[in-house]
Amino acid sequence: MMKLKSILLASAMAIGLSGCVIPTDRTYYKPEDSFGEAVASQSCGYLRTNQDSLKQSFDGYSVQVNASQDGRNGVNVNVSALVDNALLDINDVSFDASKVHIVQPENRGEITTKNAFQQQSDGTIWLSRTFLLQDAPYEKVIELELSPGAISIKGSPSELMVFKFSLTTTFDVLYFSINC
Image (cartoon, rainbow, N blue to C red; front, side):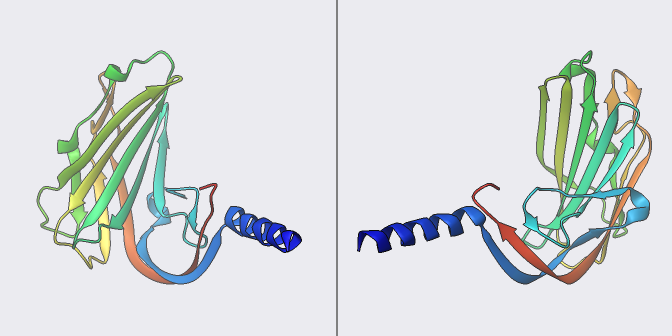
């Protein structure tokens, strides 16, 4: 009896540590490759569609954007800037949300800043903004423009950046484990 309990406990631990895999369909905003490098927004989650963000790299900084349905009739657009320069202070880098514009869908007006975050650690400065595009549950295309100066590094304005995503549904595998 004790041996059976040990085997069951070991089996349960192995399953728990190895994770879970669920076949599913995923509806998401697929990045269009001509607008940057497709990269993963998180380390665990979907297998086939994990590269759901766009990244553009410049001299000394990079910007990563992803769009996702917010579950309440809107679309979240996450914009993160990473500045690698040990000589800079967090106050040397700024983000001007007024220079972030939705190109598509057209005539959307202003977007709402939902979250803002910045942090400095080991010579790297990270700025993050989450914008909410309200009343947009089934927008087929999301195109975001960061005008020059949306990100400013020691007074030097960033370049014009455009990111584009298309709403897509495809088969995928969702995976997660205790390590994620």
